[in-house]
Amino acid sequence: MNADPDRRKRAETRLGRTVRATLATAVATSSRHRERHRQTNWLRDVILGGQDGLVNILGIILGVIAGGGSNTVLIAAGFAAAITESISMGAVGYTSSVSQRDYYQAERAREAAEIDAVPEAERQEIRAIYATKGFSGELLERVVDTITANRDSWPVETSAILRSAFVITVATLIGHLIPLLPFVWLARTPALVLAIVLSALVLFGVGVYSAVTLVGDWRKSGLKMLVIGLGAAGVGFLIGNLFHAAGA
Image 1 (cartoon, rainbow, N blue to C red):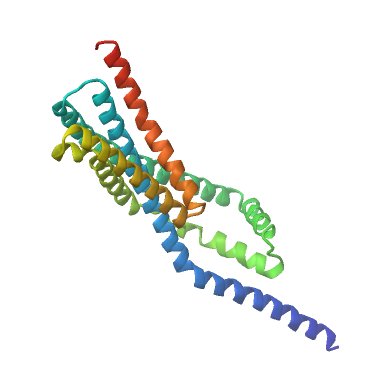
Image 2 (cartoon, rainbow, N blue to C red; image 1 turned 90 degrees about the vertical axis):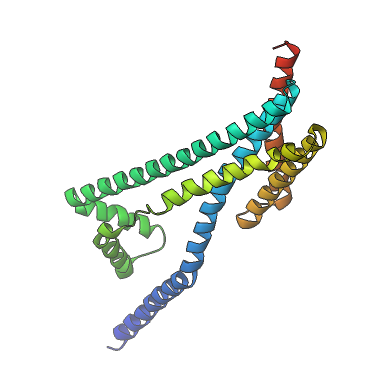
C-alpha cells in the first residue's frame, strides 16, 4: 500500500529537482546571457562599420596615390567618401534591422494564425520539439501550456534599430578617419606609412577583440582580419596603377 505513494513521492522529488535546477540555471544565467547578447550586437555593428570604412578609405588612398593624384584630390575624395559612406552604411544597418524585425513579426503572425486554426497540431509540434530536449510527462505538458498561452507576449525588439544604425554610422566614420587624418598633417610618404601601420594595428586589434569576446584563437583571428583588410585595400592600389599605366 505504501509502495505507490513512495514511488510517487520519489518521482515528484525528481521532477521538483529538475524544475528547480532548470529555474536556478535560468535565473543565474539570464542576466549574463542578455549582457553577452548586447555586447555581441555592439561588436557586430562596430566591426561592420569600422572595418568597412577603414578598408574602403585605405583602398581609395592607395588608388589615388598609385594613380598619381595630388594630396588635394586624395583628401577631397577621402572626406567625401567618409561622409557619404558613413551615412549609407547607417542607412543599410537601419533597413536591414527593419527587415529582420518585419520578418520576425510576419513569422509570429503566421504561427499565431496556425495555432488558432489547428491548435492541437501546433501543440504537438511544440511538444515534439521539447520532447527531443529531454522533457517528458507532466513537465512537458506544462512547458507546452506555458508557451502556447503566452504567445501574444512574445517580444519584438524595435528599440535597438536606431541604436544599431547610429553605431554603424559612427564606426564607419571613425574607420574612415584612421588612415585619412595622417594626410591632413603629414607629408605624403610618412602619412602613407602611418596610415598603413595604424590600419594594420586596428584590423589586428579588432580580430583579437572579436576572438576574445566571442570564440577562437586571438592570433589567428587578428591575422585573418589583418590579411583580409589590407588585401582588400591593396586592390585599390592595383586599380590605381592600371589607370596610371594607361595614362588616364
